[in-house]
Length: 179
Image (tube, rainbow, N blue to C red; front, top):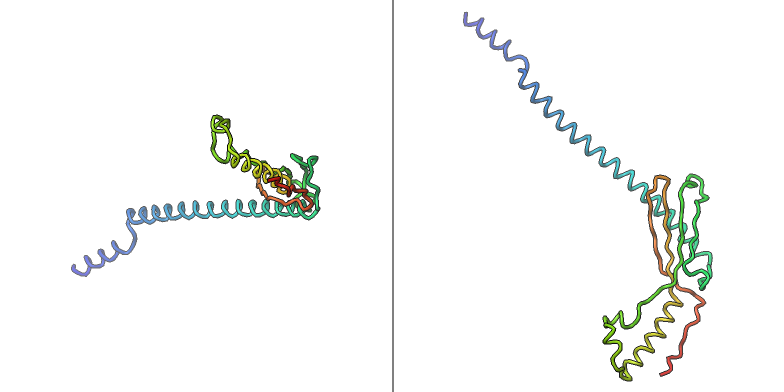
């Protein structure tokens, strides 16, 4: 009889119990769910990265086109806007907008953080000289430096913006400070 009891114990322990199977299925489900979320997140990140790189490359292409074209920066081009679609195969649905603006500096009082009362005080000769020098520098910088802003929009309305400051090569600057 001792042999029969030993054989029955071996047969009973030969398979998995229902609890062990349920624990294994639960672990598999948790690992699968975490893996699925991770893969989905990675795929979305890759897709967004690819879109961002495409938009950046198109914006850089348009910026280079503006810079190489030796465009005249004059009062007529100040606050100008050029829009359209790219003519590059595969990117014809992508839109661009190019804005050109003259640099605008605040007044000396704003830079110095002065209130209106402080501005209206009796000026010394030194403050008058400072104001004249700053006004000439401001006028010169606003004549020389221009901002070019390129915005590219994908068919899905994702957008990318690229901005650059450009030097106007033929700027006429005032060198006479009259001091």
